[in-house]
Length: 404
Ligand code: GLN
Image (tube, rainbow, N blue to C red; front, side, top):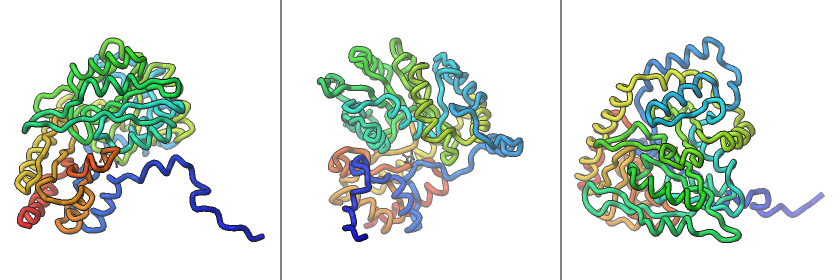
């Protein structure tokens, strides 16, 4: 039987046409290909804490090797609830309000799949962590972007326009409805830590327009210069309309473990649990067990973590500045967004290609954090969650760039 071969798109979902593979992970592949120092993807190149590795080994030895309860091991959920009480004063019922997922990445998409309907809009600050766009599209929702503007003075803050944010919430018609705002504080890629005043404004809009806040707080412990992390769930009126997402990856340097979670009121939690159950059944059981141990580390662990990252930030930024980058100093998380106008490249993608091949440093092109590539065309992001030796080597290679 002969039949014309189908159009290449015949077998594909329309959804996948609207986004590309991760640029961040593509840059890691290029770093490996060219033997470059990888300051692109945000993962540590130093060992994870010994006590949590031991806890994982012990869990495997003790045969915690079958499925955990699908919404998460009891010990980990209890530890998450305890931490939210201790750090943010938020009371959570671990039996009804937590879903443990395969990383905060799954927690985010499971949440969006659980709450979005066709025609829903999701407000996202831009520049944004690249997952949020595809996550919204895969959930049938439409992202609506609100600009974060770079600091106008050295050491200043990224800011947003109150009116622009309000308009994003107001954009409601019979077919369009604002369902949620995705918040990420401390923020990737800008390093912005949202202030109490900014969060109160977002709260007021969420309450006025009956909108959910989905808040990605994966960098909650990585803070600099006295900045304070505030979970929006703790503001009056937000507990019942917030989904708080977090995970082990960044606080405990175990990005490959893929253990994260979503915390939400019971009805929303139930919906997320259903989606999660059919997406992945559960996160790795022994690593959830070790997660309980990780979340029990003393407060000094988090102070030292933030201190070490501050030192690394203050190691990389001067080297970048010396080479000609304009750096937007982060208040949290472990990335620095930079302006590359001084180098005279047509765009960020060409610059990043030159940097990885010609200088031997991988960064992330700024355009991958914007809807319209031209908005990020003179920016690139560097990650500094690396060993001092790695940053030294990057600094040495940056000298080449300066001399060019
Ligand atoms: N969150 C990390 C980053 O922004 C890594 C996640 C990823 O691989 N996309 O680099």
